[in-house]
Image: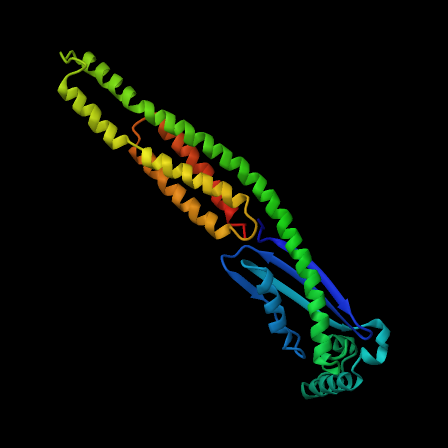
Length: 291
């Protein structure tokens, strides 16, 4: 079981080139990849997407990839002098056209695209691709490890919550079995208070009890609830992506407990149903974090 929230970082370098990759992910129903490849290496987009789709199934995943010349490559590979001069001439010309004095500080030009860090076009595509795959693997390993650690914490929390629901389901089943007898006793008490002469085995009284038993019968709902909670337990123990299945089970569980509440005419059962629904909603919120 994995969370959809995590972070990983990886790096790889050759003699003259280095690549750093950072990957972060948050909740999303589908797999959504956010990545803008370097201008000089658009082919990295498919490499990144293929790597992520192989190991991830859900989540909004943001990838930051940086390509740099290694320090050992020397300053000649770090500054594009010709491009810097061109930017400088353009800046001076623009100031002249606007009737402004020449710029006193040209240092911001070093932050313009292509001035520093060299160009990835200077290296073969296969070398850049190989380094990217190495860095991606390390980043994905870290991301998956953090998602697994968060998933373990979510599993522990969900196990406790499901145990609570299982206990409440058993209590509901017990109370539902006693509700017909309780209704009969209440009905007899009201008849007695009203001063009516009606025997406990009177046909009209028995008819009311039978109608009540039919309207309030939640046997099917209890059986289905038991099955849903058992299925939840099975998913908790299963590796891999289980978020979608758990979300579906939570919806089905909600339908059964809602039906149970609508059939109940017992205040104790109604209060227990409210508690069950509130806890189920907390579980659904947690499930949204699961891959």
